[in-house]
Image (cartoon, rainbow, N blue to C red; front, side, top):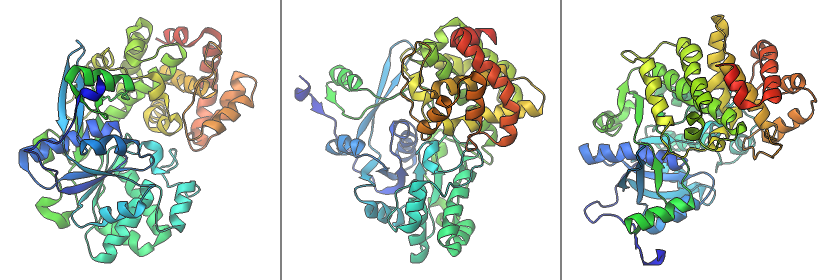
Length: 483
């Protein structure tokens, strides 16, 4: 039956766009988020802002999209089961960096490209999450400093910027769309670290001419499964091998700081598409990273250990509903100042409604990935501020303990956990090297890429108590005990 379905294709009245953007890390999130906003902006205000997608690892996305002329569908899923379909035609092509890194550099060096966007996840910046500095010991960074054709996102950025400087072309704006605090500042820092090690004059040029606006991005986008592809094909009669599923809500806040050499052509008309263009994105970052990502990660570790597959299933459990709402009320909202005009209690209520959407099957296991990279900005920053204010954080401390039990690789039923994390092997080894909850916590707190020495000293006793509680009564009862 599937072979008889019409294949998704480009509209006759919507020719392939001329590219003005290269995007590094073309995963589901950007295709359901940034690409949608840019498509809106071009439809409303015009401009040559087509996107050249770049996969830094696998050819899978390219191979699915190429037969469709790089057109795909977004599927917004409502809580009542309704779905809204939209065809996205803003991609010009998709390149696969491991196959042809020279082609990627050539497109990034093209003067027509004025913005390079990124969604490479926290680990893709090859930095030390505890300090924000570039990790020169990272194997991809070590490779990229010694080779003209890079592997890492940072290597591609710096090598392409060097080509532009040498050709007398202005730099592109680097616009990160990953969940990192002060993400533009962080990316500027690691780019400068790499550039200075490679060519100090290039670092000076980037510092003077480059722009790295910070952003806040928000849209829940669960992974698309093969059964989703089949279901949507039968529902629509059109076969799309690369649809992306998403919740109805979306929000993008961007610092309006783009390379000035391009004048009015420095960016698409993002405001016309609903992007909030601001002078300082920091309050929005804190709001989203702490309130959404912080509770998402907390629910992911505790919910997974308690046997819940998705976030919606987790918050449908009254214990975890109470736990989540207490985190917001008592531990997270008091830790930062809100953006002007935003009621954080209302924001928390809206977040809970989004979490409760049963159509969005956002797996706890998926959110739990790469915790060593996520913990510092999602949870530890809030704990640090609460410690400084002598404000207790029992729920967030329990979440840290749950992460520690999770990376130990065995769940509460004695079953193995498939831990996906850049430090997975090391973390498992540290956990296995100790016999008691206190010793396991001490071993994991020694990982300086995650915990500073000062924070480790402050967390040793409370996290040990929470870890022991998890082992003794389980995640669900432990969450209930701190609610």
